[in-house]
Length: 305
Image: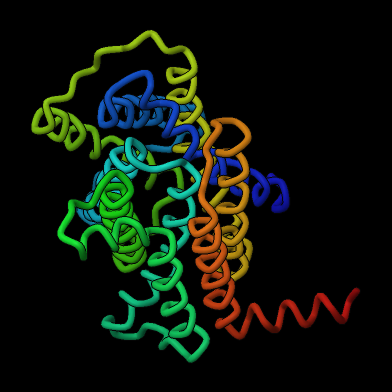
């Protein structure tokens, strides 16, 4: 697949995933919708491996890699689906976009990691300011002794999701099992299924289907595109482009997701929320520009043009 096509697919999939998660909750309970999505994706992934005549490695290092991917495939996704019952889809994308910042912060405690510079630390502080603006009402209520409310509860779910996602990504890289992208994806998906079943049991959720066709279509869309094609294209561009260039995707998707949520789902965001979202996107821009390779690439583009 051409690199540009793969890049555009990643942008499109990541921008539409939050809205798909929101709609899928109309068809089933949140954890059930997530579990069905992963089960369909795992089955399709196994068929893809058979078609390509690739086996699913089950040696110790491969199983370890599948296991450490669970915080992202299970933990982050389960939290995101729960957050979708409290937050607009656009805000889910904005908060999830903080993953590069959290990854950078987490890696500061690991040996051999790149140290953050002034650009990065400024971006982290700006990101915190953006979060405070987005959730100002919830924070004010909490300080006044009230409960978190809908938005505050959604914030806690999403902060848990993005933390688990960032941690899982770092762990998979550290294991370095040398798996093919689809092998890593399918192995993690299969291992996540018992986790979703247990979570449903604990939460008292069932597979009851409401009859909502849009929600069911969203589950199938997320299984095929969000869990398989999106990850496949992501690993493709990650193997061909600098990681810093790939990170630019996180700057584009929140803006698109906010627009789609407003146009297709009638999501109305207040002025302060939009300002906070803009500050978070600015923080992500600063964080990406903190990488000298990105700044060099941008200067080269200006020279070439």
